[in-house]
View: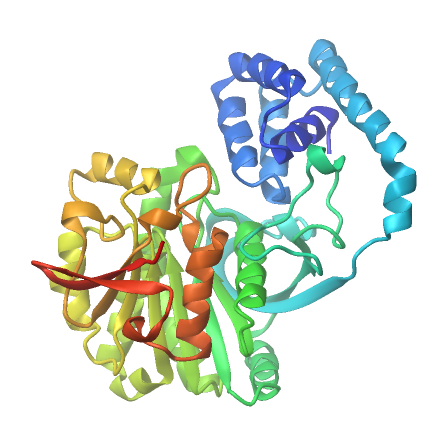
Length: 425
């Protein structure tokens, strides 16, 4: 990794509060808009190697990677951090390093193979054919629920360390039959015969999806096999329009994989969890599978939509009736403080299903949870995975099979539209 990217990653890891980091960032952003966008993507998740690589590529394309003044500023910043780290090294050595839990997560993806063997770059952001495989994701033993731990200047860290950070350690592909056999074996290890299928949203790389799946499965104490489906999101702030086209294109592959997964994996209890724009593909794929193969609907234990970036009226009148063949209600987490959904509404001109407020979706067959009070993060869009309260609620939904009225952390609100729930203060 080049010295400028290393410095930006370190600065972003502390929340961008260093004056020296802000000066370096300002100089870089003035040189090229593409670099400014890439820095913003790293700041959202400094632990993502794929985002770091994208910044390095943007610097090279803009002719900045070799700029001696910028490199000097970056090196001075890193040297300052290294001096502070050296001063604290004896105390850190006495404290010892925490152990690491390694999560095995399975995947299906219709991203292109990049030709790069690094796990973070194994798959790119272009369309490809459906492929299968598995990953190993490290979770530090002192992991805090809801966090994707990454290098931080406050802890004097510059590089990923599996003992301290959530890291994609490996990724390998497998042929479909071998994949299904390994997945069956993983499911059989748990008496619950359960599987969690996660579909990521906008601005997510393959690496981001793998790390998030590992973190979710670990935090939920999921008693089964975690799986994710990764469609070709561009993984960057400026990729929204392309992501929209790609998530629509990916729906057919997701539907085919879901039907195959439900029929062949031996999982008797499947939990479907989708975030943001990924909810569009998941809702439509699930509806099409239920319509074509109604006998498979009973294996879908829960459908959970977190901050769904779906047209609210399309969701109410087209998708919900199509999902009516399931025995349990769909769970929807919504928020009035979600800036990503507000931006989507501005683009499309219509309310999104993941918004709360006057347009909150309250309908038969849906348990709607207003998560406005527990939002967190830069764009307030990943609260489902980054806030202990939301994760705790999801834990009781999945682990205890408790409906909203039975979960202690929620309180009912009766509105003119019907009943929904909010988090207790």
